[in-house]
Image (cartoon, helix red, strand yellow):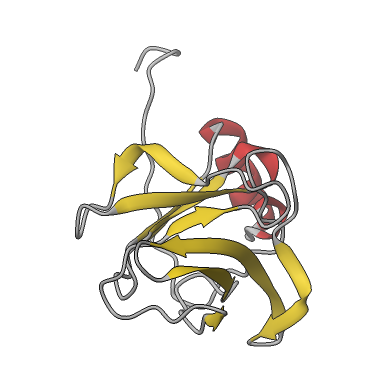
Length: 153
């Protein structure tokens, strides 16, 4: 294989094995907050807007694959599509390059340390999400050396 050829590597991670601890908006504001704990961990705080229902805060479960989210000042129903914004700077956190592979709704995107990201579906009730580890050669080496994803989250 040529040295500059790109390869994609997919890993299946069991639900509950990863805790997202350092999610940020595109401007670098930390979204994890000690204001609310879910499953014993700092929740991920975002501002959400849902057409016809207004806006409110969403405290998202930081356990990857768990959906014990808490809504504040908004009540979303199954199937609602939310727009995600940073509660500090109001920047949109929409992934402009992809849509959900399960339901075609827009994806939101959280940035993680070392240029990694978490993408998730913005439709309430859809459980599509994925973790992208960027700079795969370095990241994969660290993953297998440390046998943990702690340094990426």
